Image (cartoon, rainbow, N blue to C red; front, side, top):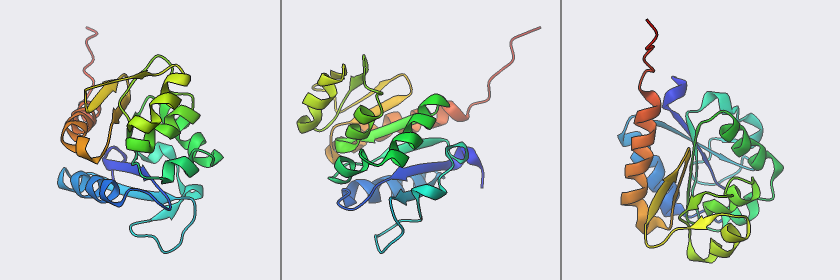
Length: 175
C-alpha cells in the first residue's frame, strides 16, 4: 500500500456521518485509500483502528470531518499530537465544519485563512485565525478548510488539487 495513497480520517462518536461517508467515497473514487481512526476500537461505522496505531509517516494527509466529534477529539492529546506531526512533516491537513476546532487546539490557525462552521468562528478568531466568508472552502499553505457538508464541491476540488500536487515528482533543476 503506497504511502502517498493513504489518507487518515480522524473522527469519533457524533462525527457527521455524511461528511465521513462522503470523504471515504470521494477518496476511493480518486484511487486514494481512506483510513478511518477513532479514540477507541468499538462498533462505529467505518472505524479501522484507534489512534494508538496511527503512524503519521504512513499517510499523505489527514482529514478531519465535522459533526460534534471534534468538540471532544480536541481534548484527546493523541489527536493533537497526530495533527501536529502532519504539520511538522509539511503534509496537507484538511478540516471541514467543526473539524477546525482540532486545528485551533493544535495551534495551527494563527494568521491562517479558515473556512469553518459559523459557530466555530469565534474560536478561530480568538486564536488569531482569519474567518473567511463567503467562500465555502479555502487553502492557506498546507491547510485546507471548508464550512459545512454543503461546501463539499468546493472543498474537495481543493483537496484533490493538493493531493495531486503533492504526488507530482520534484524535478532537479541543478545542472
